[in-house]
Image (cartoon, rainbow, N blue to C red):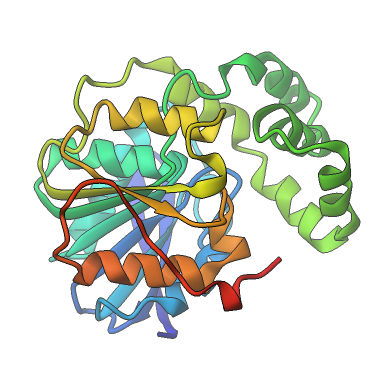
Length: 283
């Protein structure tokens, strides 16, 4: 499925959100909500691998180009309201997918409105990453985006020195990460500012939660996933073999096959491992 158009949705307060649409622009389909340190461009390979819906709309949340600024008063509620406006624009949405922080936003949106299906890959919730908020604020005050990337990768994601240096060696990718890191403090602060509801996705007909096998049951992503799971008691859990938090970059075809399968599957028999051909996985 190829990208066909890009929509611009006004969200008020002097900001806006763009949406990259793949497939049939006016057909109801899947809406994808990326998380922190990510944008619509980073999800293009997953979007092109999806064919279970006639259209895929990938949100470029505020705070990343070409969408507008976060603006004052930014909060997690701001993100949920933005998504509501996008869902109004994408009338007849059949399914909603969110990754990480975007997964939390998607699950909360399904408290506000009835949705046929919500899929979330390793959604995170409070107190995820709260321990680094002072460091991120200090880096933001200095406009030291290189330090922000280091904090996210080393102090939150847990990359070791060698892994971090591998990322830094790709100058183009490192520069892109610095741009994507600019909203990091505001987004992490918003995530930690308000207690989550006792139940999430309560108005969704069907909820599927995905965790990468490498993170299953381990901090920080697997343990935050377990916290979310306790608040989505009706959800089916799926484990993506051999993958961690960055499956959309490291194995987009594999992740796309899993999501396609969730659209088509009627198997609701509890926790399951979703096997996938790993031959196309990127390193």
